[in-house]
Length: 293
Image (cartoon, rainbow, N blue to C red; front, side, top):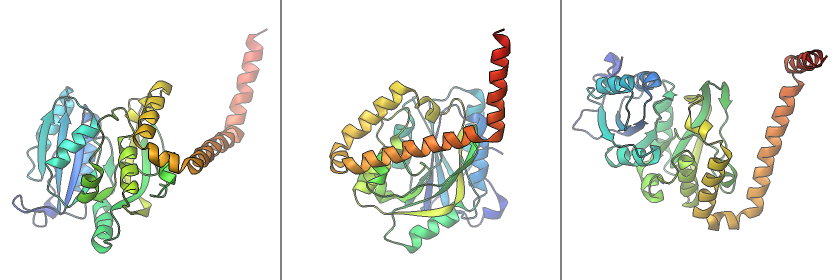
């Protein structure tokens, strides 16, 4: 299945001439291997009042193009194609052409749990004080486990990005922040966006359960962004852009960074102390000794 048609939703779905409540924003670049799963997760939503705006960011992969051709025939999908410009610019392009009062980015290699929209939309509908709703994230692909997302607040958000790009927010948040900054090509455009939202006083609400899934693969942008030169450049850009915030909260930011570093070291220590890892290390030492004879 490459489109979004789902017989249970045919009557409930927003007609083409009516404004949908939610716009799902999906930039795509050669992600055909995983795009079908993202589309299936959208079709399976228990909340039907949405549109999906897809921007093909210059894909060349035949599988991706075939999946996109199928999806574009669905009445709830608006499809655009652009030259390669990066996820931030592609998201902005899609949001500018979307109609929903609420926005949720969904990357082409990620996917929703069936109740994602139902549970997040309910919060924004019932709480006018909340601008952003996010949940815990399930890792798939090269990583497994749960990302128990952090607090949507200052100064914590200056030390690390506490939430994933897949979060439901009011259109006014995007307008207030000024959209996603296209200077962040390799990564961090979502972190920069959330910093801008918190700085402008927007409040977040965390749902403490897994409602979406984040795929990590060897070719993921997040993996490439761990290159020392790339990560240093991205961090410099972030700090320069938000220099006043970093200067105002310098002590708290440094303390937060140290806490993250300490937590990482403790996690590595627990790994090395695991009996299976300890046994493997001892076997390696024995093999190295034997090879040296």
